[in-house]
Figure (tube, rainbow, N blue to C red):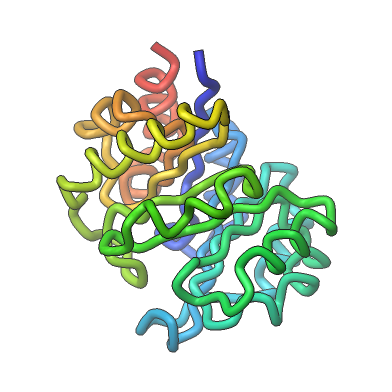
Length: 219
């Protein structure tokens, strides 16, 4: 059985007490923490960058799953590595030299991932499937939290898992956008095994929300 991971997105955390929210995530049983970097160019929003990541690294040993929603991410791989990232995922649509940038991430000793938007076909990843540790499928348009899951994403997850299986690859499939307890089983059944959840984790009792997600994921 493929191992599953919950990666709560701190984009939905309360930054007035971010450290406490992160502690709640860990106490609930999560082992990953999702960190969304937005530049105001590749996506309309601006989030946070290296200084916050460096501070987060100081207070937690959770796996820092860094999603770069930025133009030309190759410019910043070393900086995010130095700030404590464990996994860096970059957008196929934003990267001039995808293969070279993925290789650069792995040369830093990190796990390398590639991301595509909902409208980008899985087939654009055919040449890098064996060069990544994780593939992130956006299940909403990137740039804003709180959006509803795009139903057609389910078939896209299933298709990608089939592509990986055909090559004998056990690559992680991460999904991000609109994932709630109500549709969690759907994406797991389709082949996803790394689950990003923002408002569904950080709204209300964080520890209990994490436990509820993990209960479903570990069935």
